[in-house]
Length: 323
Image (cartoon, rainbow, N blue to C red; front, top):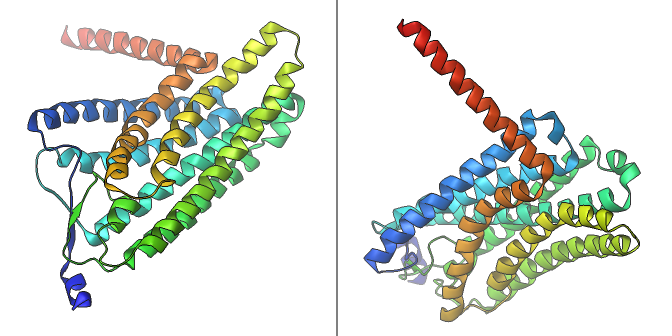
């Protein structure tokens, strides 16, 4: 009978963030604004890195990959979330598992990329003369491919484990996306082993990535303390501070979400954390890097100047054609 009920369950209902209509309208405008800023900001970073010769360095190559992942990361969840502000947000079981898969793929890739970017900063600060050799083009590509391989492998584990659970009559996912913890909560069997496995695997990957990133900064700080020039220290700090801000934003929310046990209270907290790392953090990434890096600021100024020149030339062409 349990197996029969499981086959009858074809879809889930994503419960969203709130039931208050006035708050749903406000949140829709808020999320839409941040999503558009996210796409425009990250797309600008990718375009600048591809087009501007002054940004053809390993650091900006990795940043462009991070921006690309951020755009995909938000696009996996945000459009579906916005639909839920105005109507019942249903999703098929297969669609739910698919969303979960790509959500964890991209989240894991971002975590590994942040660790790789930490290593990049370590090489740039502690081995500046060998930087171009150590962080060559082929090395950077291999590191990016390794981050994708890690994300694909890890997410397959989560998705396959969740898809094997028997889902009976409870269709309501207490979240605005199909994440592993709220979906497992709907299973009509004991899930303590599954919860423990998710916490261990997710925690292991998060701690490894975070520890490797912090290890890079231990070496960086040790190196900085040996520098007597305050100008030299300030330059290194401005180079690394943008990356550190992103690291703490990402890992702070991710660890709070996946390391604790599943409960009604934790699921509500998970919603807030999910908004941070799917809506707000991807929007802040390009802003933080643009504001705190001189090369990126100069590249943006060049882009604005080019667009103004093109606008003037277009206006002149229209004027000549109208005569």
